[in-house]
Image (cartoon, rainbow, N blue to C red; front, top):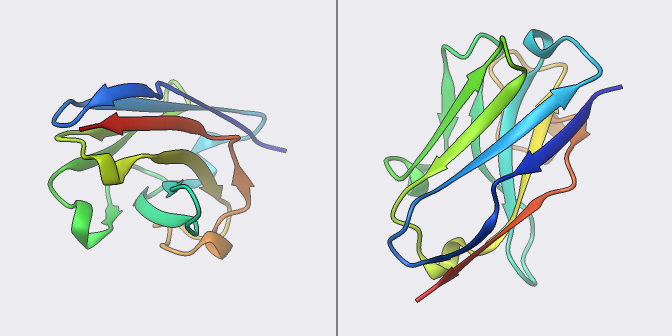
Length: 125
């Protein structure tokens, strides 16, 4: 059983950066592709970014390419989401997810087996 704990959320102003982290425990981290999803108020959860087990490949949501970056530290069992130039529409609960079946990750919630509880990011204009 894998446990995922997100951290780093908070309230920021439009244009600010923010870095989220997700710490994994209870499994072999390099066996999992990792991803970030988000869910805005009254909207469905949506894919943001994924990173392969080795960290050598990433999958981006086209609209976020260039503003958001995903990285992982396999020695520390962590995955990070660097978000730059945040906008009010980025306000959401951000979730970390782990896939046991997809080496490169995927963009669908069904690709992932384990989820964190989420961390709230609020961006004010």
